[in-house]
Length: 223
Image (cartoon, rainbow, N blue to C red):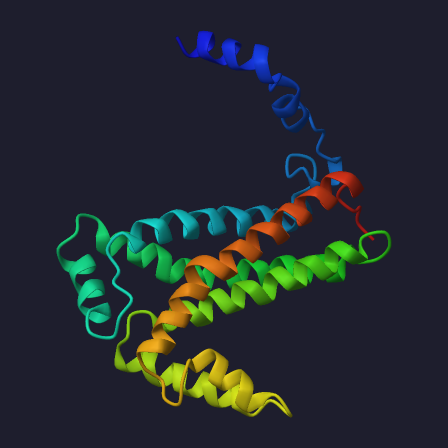
């Protein structure tokens, strides 16, 4: 049955060349762990993407129970952890995955730097990769406030004061992030919107560009 459905779709959209192009893409020998043990360092980018996918899927599950307001935010997280089946596991995956994805991205960045993969003609991809890094940091920062407990609240207060210390535009940046004169309901709403809608949209665009440039330029060789 699946084959018949696939053939029906393929006759109309010709999708076979698309996935064959991906499946038949030859991996350079220097990034194949079967040939070179050092090739494992080239896996950090793939691991980062894999963890990012887990973060997206687990985050989608969490948004089905999370309530983004200061009255119910903490209670909804507590309910998720104590009453929802596998809720504690999924939230744990999302919580620790946020740290792990930063570690993997840092290792990937170090590999790119020390192997000279940022040099011509891959400078634009290096810039896009750094933008992805900053977006990931933004996702971690905005997600930290969402449980609305004491640790999250005061950590966010520190973050807002750091933003306030930026020369010239600090007060404007702080008010933009805070959503008002104090850290409260509007702050939580803005951080939630950034974490769930705006930053993931930017991340998706950057990832598509990153992968397109990798396919066009190939994986750089060792120094």
